[in-house]
Image (cartoon, rainbow, N blue to C red; front, side, top):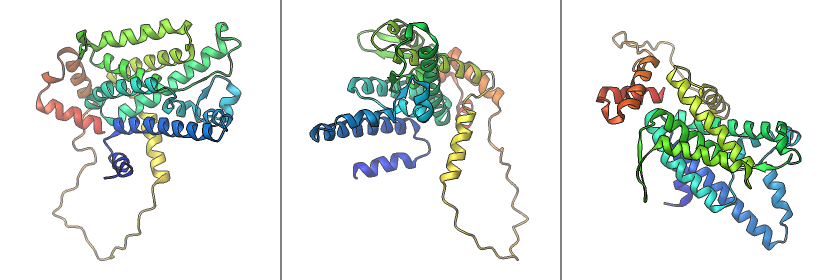
Length: 297
């Protein structure tokens, strides 16, 4: 099977958001690397900065007004190999937790909202904090805000979930998330303050997302609604169906409620609380099924 077919298959599945995010980031990175090589060989390096300007988020509000899509696209762009490597590893490790317990839809919501929150923090800091005066126009790229949102969300949902780390052994993810936030705070006065500020925006979003979810409010609903709207816009018109006027449905077939099999929000909250206290393995088979159904709603 060709690489193209593998990618096509990955995007044909509805429950494959984690792998799709990783593939999109990897493809953008690969395309930019190839593009840079071509420009180097053709001595047209200046063109690269023009292309990057269409993808990176600028701290200049006027540039953002001309390129509003960059508030989203910057979260899929990397130039450094280790930058994308560590981002994708963390996305995979922590994204699996979110996907398993909350489903693909909320993983998508966290990634997108994390990027938006990180971008907003970046814009506010560079336009209103005196320490950044004179730096207007500096761009930021990378999935770090989205990944940090997912890390903190996983730690807020399951603070005692344990990872086995090389040399350190078992470490609870609440401590991993705490270290990530502290490193971002410490890095603000370093060489990449803009990137570290986006991490903090993503971290706050991840924390609030889970807290609101436990309170029965899903911050990801606008993302889901927007995705559904875009799906309808780009969906092909269905083929016309021809029906016969004399056809009558069988009276013996019972009507099926569209709400059958759904899990009430209050039950989901109780299950999430139980996971926080005792872990996923403490759930009964019925509770696991309810949680899975809720993640698909």
